[in-house]
Image 1 (cartoon, rainbow, N blue to C red):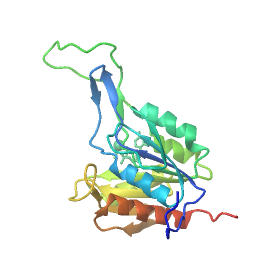
Image 2 (image 1 turned 120 degrees about the horizontal axis):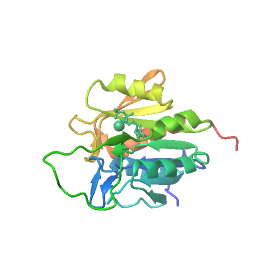
Image 3 (image 1 turned 90 degrees about the vertical axis):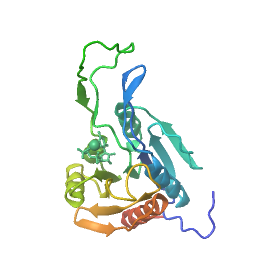
Image 4 (image 1 turned 30 degrees about the horizontal axis):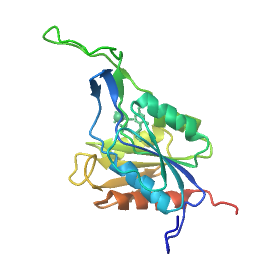
Length: 226
Ligand code: CTP
Ligand code: CA
């Protein structure tokens, strides 16, 4: 595919993007999920294709149209997403983890619909593996970008996540702010690297946030000998 006049700055790069929220089953008719719409991740996938990348999108359930030229891998749970991402990590040059992975899943998935009994019930949750943190441990040549969804002390929490998870960049968004976060078409982000703030973007469409993030990424990739 050709986009006349576009500089294909990610030509030859294999980009793996995760998007959407994961779905953690409780029983055949119930699950735990979150408000993620997938829009940020889908916009990143679409813009990466425009810049010439070969793009795989690992997504939780979403009704969004799959951008042209993107290979979609649909997943449900965090464990599914982990498997889909880890099995494609080696071949990837850039990994962008925009997905809102559930931090916990139900300790047991009931085979049958759970019947109501007493006046209260307790659902035991167990922690999901942190996929981004695993990537940070396994990472060799890959350029890894995380997201940080916060409602307070954005800079501090985002930088802490970047370091803890060994990312190259982290995109912090204050999801409680007007025009930012999960469900809308716009976002307000602050992008950090190991040394601190790289860029504070104004309110932009998710498409423009994606474009700027990918430009910053292209600037930081090793130049190809070709
Ligand atoms: N992430 C992940 N696997 C998880 C949880 C999070 O890969 N089990 C990734 C997300 O895709 C995102 C980054 O880690 O790129 C940060 O997610 P976030 O929910 O903001 O941070 P957590 O580390 O889960 O911390 P908390 O929710 O307590 O703020
Ligand atoms: Ca989390």
